[in-house]
Every structure is written in C-alpha cells, then in structure tokens.
Length: 390
Ligand code: HEM
Image 1 (tube, rainbow, N blue to C red):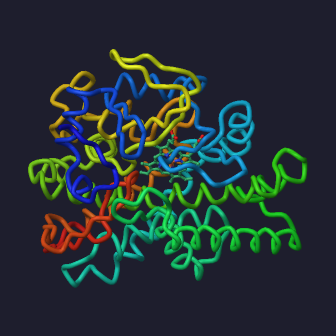
Image 2: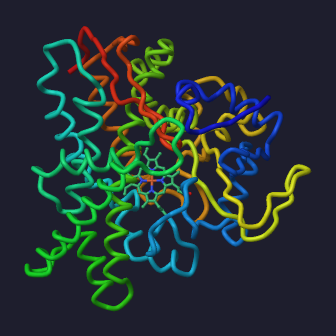
C-alpha cells in the first residue's frame, strides 16, 4: 500500500523512496486520513503553480485550514496578490540584494570566529540559525538584541507535533507574540521620522489606503517566517550532502566557483521547502483521476525536483548541474520573493564555512532533524574539522 503522510517522523528522515513511488505509481495521490491530494511530478507541479485560477492560494498554502481573516502575500490570488507583491518586489532583486554581500560576509566571519581554533561547530545552532535571522532583522530594522527571541518564535510557528494536523498551542502563542512585537514596532516607528526600508514602504502603503494595518502586520509576519527557517535549513542540508558526497566536497574545494551551482543543486536535491498547498477552484481531471473542486492539493516541490522525467540522473547529487529551473523556490506568481537573498546568503555562508573547515565530518550520531510537514532540515548539524584556508 502506498501511503504519504507528511506528519510522519519516519518520512521526515528519508522521504525520497516514498516520493519515487508517488511519481511512478500515483502521480495524483489522495490521502484519505487528512483528505488532501498530492502532485509529485515536475510537469504537474509546475503547471499548478502557473495556474492560479485553477489552483488558488487564497485558502492558505499549508495543509491545515488557515485561521487568519486577513490576506497575506503568500495566501492571496490576483488582483490582491499583484498589488501586495508590487509594493516591495523591487527591494529583493538580485541587484538590490547584491549590496548586502559584504555585510553578510562580515556577519558570517563574526559568527565563525569563536569556533576557528576549536575544530568543532554546530552548523545550525552556532551559525546557520543566526545568520538569516540577523539579515532579515536588519532589513526589517529590528534591533540585534531581539534576534534570538524572534527566531525562537518563528521556529515555534513552523514546528508540528507528530501526527498532528493543526498548529499546536505553542505555535499559536508564538504567532500572537510575533504579531504583538510587530504592532509595537510600528507604533514606535509612527512616532519617529520615517526610515527608508521595507516596513516604511509598507506603512506608506497603509497611509495611502492600499493596505490595511492587519495586512501590513501579516506581510511582516511572512517576511520574518519565510526568510529565517528555510535559509538556515538550506545551509545545514548542504553541509550534510557534502559530507555524504566527499567527491563533491573535494570538487568544490578544487573549484570554488562552483558554489552557486552547488547551492542550486542542493536546493534541487534536498531543498528545505518540501511542499506548498493550493485549493482547487473547480474539478481538475489529471492522470485518469479527478481532483474535486475545493480540494487541498499539496505540490511536492522536492519530490518534483527528483523527477527523472525532468532531470537526467535525478537521484544523483551533482554540483556541476546548476539546475536553476528547480521548484525549490516554487514558481509562477508566488515564486519566492527572497530567492536572490537566499542564494546570496547561502553562497557567502558556505564560502566562509568551507574556508574555515576545509575537509570536515558531520557527527552523524548527533544529528537532529526538525519535524514539520513542509520544511525539511536539521536542528543540529555537529561538525568536526581540521582547518581550511582561512
Ligand atoms: C532557501 C531559502 C528559501 C526557500 C527554500 C524558500 C522557498 C519558497 C517557496 C517554495 C515559495 C513559494 C510559495 C508558494 O508557492 O506558495 C516562497 C515564497 C516566498 N518566499 Fe521564500 N524561500 C527561501 C528564502 C526566502 C527569504 C530569504 C525570504 C525573505 C524575504 C523569502 C520570502 C518569501 C516570500 C515573501 C514568499 C511569498 C511570495 C509570494 O507569495 O508572492 N523566502 N519561498
């Protein structure tokens, strides 16, 4: 019997055998227990993200029903989505984020400094968990002193207990805490001279009547959630895959210019965002089945990224591949707004990390995975190293 249960901890350990069976045996899968559908082939996921009239985001992009009354960028269809995205899309282009490179590098070096001489580091807790949150806090103008608190809340929001469909109480409390923090921040800003940053642009949109106060809060919420966990997990997953593929690590040390391609290949091969959900707006006939109108449909992006119908030797980790058309950042209208920032952060973080460690080993017995139906990655990646170039 083929089953796909995204809340099953065993699946989180290694979903890829199940993913292969889904693609081959049931490309349109129905999970009866939780009553959702799953698309697993690249072509089907790509078609779905490009067809918002049939596959809507407005009922939420998680499997559980959304409780929020207010549309957020990620949970909106056009024309609401178009208006919202347009407000700050220009601040996340590759050219705009390129100016952050030195700041990201300085921060990476500062975080690595205490570990250089010790020969050991927990890539997640000592480094990767701190870097993206620090950068997003800078972009949103939040003080350094609040970073750890904000990161704890955002981590709690994405955590799911085993086999539980809904957000646990702690997750709800953490969401309220984040909303409360953002509301206070906006109140403080309103009393100060205007700044020139993302929140200022959103507040200006509120003043112009383009967004409600709640919509601004929801926007900040999405920015702080989306930019934190995923980039952290990407860095951890990349260290793990390089450890498991020593030939690829050696290649990367020999040809450091391959790093951007290696980031893309890690996104394809073992990316952090396993899936995003949509809701059908009418019956959808596909591969001899009919997904009924109003059904939740999980688009299994990392599964699609290993589809042999799309990529040759799809199950092989090959850092020369440079597969920039992977679905790890989604696609269509909702394609990741922060993709250029995530790519920059991952590149710089890995450059600095590998320069410090040289060859390294992950202590596999002490690895710890996070458990979430949507995000794949580790909470601890302990690494030992003899030392590298820097
Ligand atoms: C490796 C890191 C990241 C991964 C894997 C990732 C993945 C994704 C994916 C798959 C989507 C599409 C959602 C959908 O189709 O429903 C998305 C959307 C989004 N991401 Fe990212 N993301 C990453 C980093 C970031 C960063 C650093 C930011 C910073 C601001 C960010 C902000 C967003 C936003 C705002 C959206 C919603 C876009 C929209 O609905 O128009 N992401 N991301």
